Length: 91
Image 1 (spheres, rainbow, N blue to C red):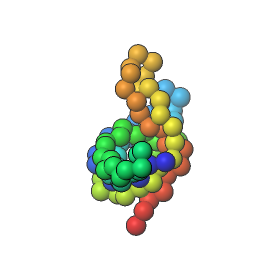
Image 2: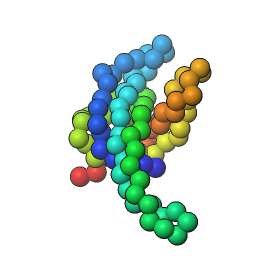
Image 3: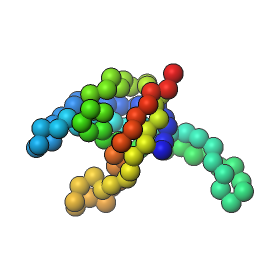
Image 4: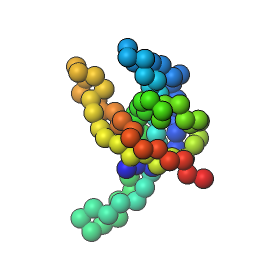
């Protein structure tokens, strides 16, 4: 699970099977405990949402919580992308 602010959104597109796919960038910032010490964590994560999740009204600036898994962007890529299984907007 990761939370953050939606930075940018690409236009919705469709897989060869006709499934809607939405790609966006999520900016995450938090404080984590590592080896007993507080550590500030900041990152940008590339995210994809498929099917009904791709149709949700996500806008740049939205604060969301997302749950999913990491996978390679494509068969020949080493870049990771988070695939969302659950999405919740935070107000």
